[in-house]
Image 1 (cartoon, rainbow, N blue to C red):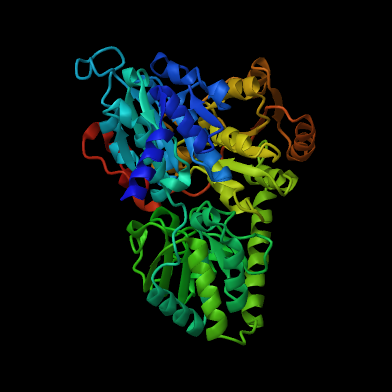
Image 2: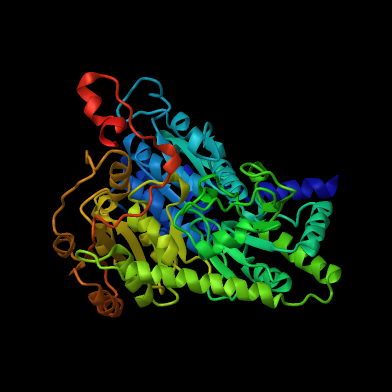
Length: 591
């Protein structure tokens, strides 16, 4: 009892008097936060004033949506949660799209959300919005500060949930609660959260090993969880031990080294046919660190590739994702690396003399060669002025191996899924299944801040570029040398393809015009290049990488060479009943 009292006294003596702003900033420091993204606002200015002395860099963006995408990508590359902040009301609501994207991407993030002051909540005052309600469905949790003494504790809760559930958390604080005083202790992260989970249920591991041991055609799908957990080496070991071809989950092309003989490439929209044909014949699928998203496993190229009768072993850190989209034989709730380590260890005991299946290796090798040749053949078809696939081919050939590439959503950006190959993790930063345009460029800026030495490229269509080109000013101001590769076909090409296939080439809203993007970039202080010949791409890439300055490449590509629709099943041939619209009926023009 005496000892307990002494410990309590020690704990009390460790408390220090501080302001709420100081408690917030010191908690950020403890969490190793180096950058915070947003636009300056009076609501959080007392906190902002402390950033320079705390060693935190405030990155002022031009639109708060960009702040969320930057923080999302920063976390994907660094592994440290991104932090964003905005003015109460419109500043915070401007972040909705990027926070929703991070939520579906499973990126830990803390959204510092100043709200209306406690004396004006509910009075529809200036810049008031019910931010907690707005963000409830697009975050893992909303944490609201209701007492000044719990500011640090609430922020710790936000970080704890963000890391534990892999996604954004709203930290909502009335703007007047940045002021005042409290007594508290700034804890170290290990005192209030645990980042790693164990191997999962031992019985489930044993069942998984038994399935893999007896599998005739096992196939691996490696996803973002493998990357986050640092488990790629173990997954490679399992693949080699079983002679199991390994694919990567949709738009996570960095989840298995592309140069490995067993790598078959990505599944999902515009992925690898080699991966799809291989997966289609699997009898056991080991899905590591992937939720097997519904969109990411849909048929593509008219190949209904996801196996109907294969026994699926799914490893995921989040129990909500197990069996959510495909029925599983074995579900393992655990860390992707820890669970894979244990599976590999037990496999070595269960199959002590595993031999390479040379026949299967040959089949995999032939499929990859055929697919690679098909990609080249498609790219070498003439375009006016440039076949977009040719531009992607030349671009990927010119990129250094350690490059980070962010991709937007849209026709060319999605086609890049077939051409992008990575041999190292945390190199592929894609828009993923939320599918919002305007993602790639601010994401590339965040990725560059996370890895300052890597060459960073953003692949963007001209439509999406119109949503993000304002951030060139941020890149110039902060000296972030990202290379924006704008594929300019003067259209919202993914939607235009739908109008080609389903609406008899009637274009409503899909044709767009724009200024000369290279000249706009120059006027903003960046380097700008206009490219109209495929053979000019590689020399320009070499030049800009030597200069290491923010750069915009305006690459004119053929607007008639379009990828298949994202969802053939999502549209139907039009039916019209009213006389004034009868000429638009498929039965009239489709005869």
